[in-house]
Image (cartoon, rainbow, N blue to C red; front, side, top):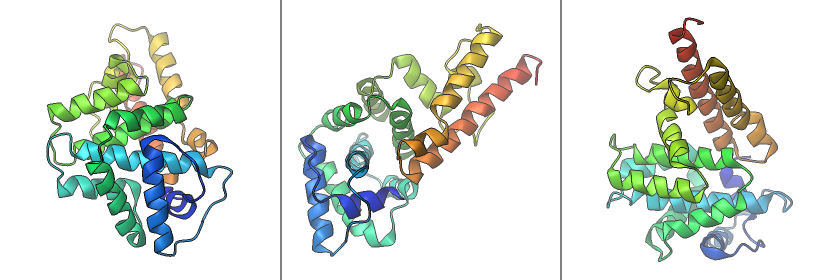
Length: 245
C-alpha cells in the first residue's frame, strides 16, 4: 500500500501524542469531512500513519530551512511520495500547517526517532528524501546542511555517518562524481576485508525486503532500492581501483 493509503484512510481512532499527534488529528478530521473511508486495518497502521505525518512535517520545515519555500521543492516532495491527485488538497493542507506551526523541527525528529529507534534504515531513507528536497533547486544551502545534520544527530547518526549519507546521495546517477570510499563510510587506507565488511553491512541494512517486512510504504522501498544501487556502484569502483574489478 502507498504511504497515503494509510494516512488518509486510517488516521481516525489512533492515539499518538506530541506534535505528530496534533497533525494526525487535523489530517483525519479533514479526510473525514471529505468522505474518505478507512483503507487499512489498525494492526500495522499506527506507526505508518505517525511516520507519514512526520515525513510531511520534516519535509515542510526542510523546505523553509533556506528561508523560502520554492515551488520546485514542493513538487519534489510530491514526486518522491507520489501524492495521488485526489489527496493533493489534504496533503497540501497538512504540509502548510506543519510549515507554519509553532513546533520546532527538532520535536518532530525526536518523535520519529523514538518511534523508529530500532529501524535505522528507515531513518536513513527519510534523510535521503530530505536531501532530495533540499537539492531540488540545484543548490544545497548551508542552513539546509545544518538542518539535515541536526536531524541526523537526533536520529542517532554520527557526523561520519551523516557525511556517508550525503556522499551516497544520488551516486547511482553520477557514479564518477562522488568518492566511493565516503559512500561506504571507510577510509582509503582501509583493508580489503574492512571494505567488504562495510559493503555487506550496508547492503544488509538497506535491503528492500527488510523495509517490506517492516511494513514500510512502497515509496521507501523504492528509495532503499536506489540506495543499494549506490552502495554497489561505490563498491564496484573501489574493486576496479584496487585491480580486482
